[in-house]
Image (cartoon, rainbow, N blue to C red; front, side, top):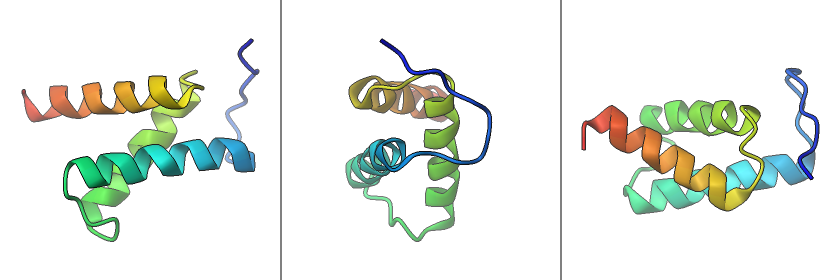
Length: 74
């Protein structure tokens, strides 16, 4: 069952861990340095997509990849 999600800025450690793993995977897939300014944009995207009810790690990863492909025009 999906957990209720609030719009507050706080995230539980489990949620943060999911977002971090997805961020790390996309950085690795795209050879993106996690300290690069583009990585900050990626991190914001991961959290925003997560907050839009993508609670599962696999679902979040696919949503982020899909969004990045669309943004790149591929």
